[in-house]
Length: 281
Ligand SMILES: N[C@@H](CCC(=O)N[C@@H](CS)C(=O)NCC(=O)O)C(=O)O
Image 1 (cartoon, protein in one colour):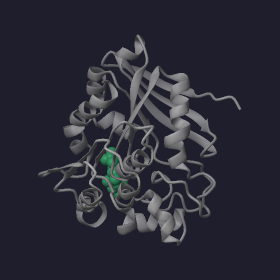
Image 2 (tube, helix red, strand yellow):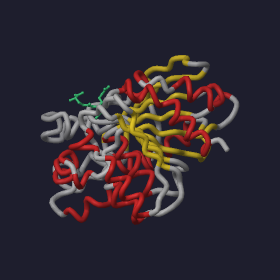
Image 3 (cartoon, rainbow, N blue to C red):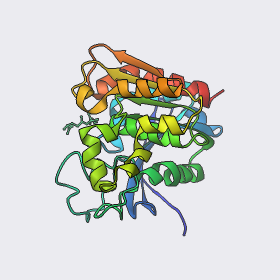
């Protein structure tokens, strides 16, 4: 099966190229959208890639239009890849009914329960299919790291922890660290994965730190004024799990910051610098 993609728009940005693309995903069995920022260094040779996984309700556009990340990606010579947050197949029953399930809420898992099992394979899409496409069509070398926000912070932790050979470093903004122990996780996992809670654990970062042990760096920023902090995000659970697993974690509580992209914009420079240390050395 030949692989191809469509360019919807490309714009010069900080000496590089900001682009928006679509392709027919084999994994999700529907067209998928993604955004790529190629830094100026990509004109003269392959560069490493930082994946950014966005949160609930986002598309491939939120991060690249709101976080101001391109300035830092151009400085360090890192390509940014931001996938959409779910399939938009137009046929999955219930996908448009609620903002925290279905469209915009793929949760970076491979759904096994109906009606989600046909299209909602965001884990395989992010870990396997999209990187293969990027490697084939963009000037990327084999070095990858992963970052994300909220639902996408959960995605970054899960994809990163489970794939030691694929990602050199992992970071997150306000991640859902223990979806098996918060309302968003229960809602999504019971629908996408079914009632057997054992199957949920493969997508729970606080479980995974015990099973996938290595010394890769992990950076998490969390705003203290985030309205989802206590009920949904619960970063202290990750701190406890990492302490028990004796795994390195830098958890920074940022006073006064909320859940928005203003928070991400304030610290994205730190995150890209952090990843560049492991991607570019
Ligand atoms: N119900 C709210 C909450 C959703 C929310 O806060 N989403 C976060 C991720 S969990 C986000 O990044 N929203 C998009 C944005 O701020 O650009 C909404 O529809 O925006």
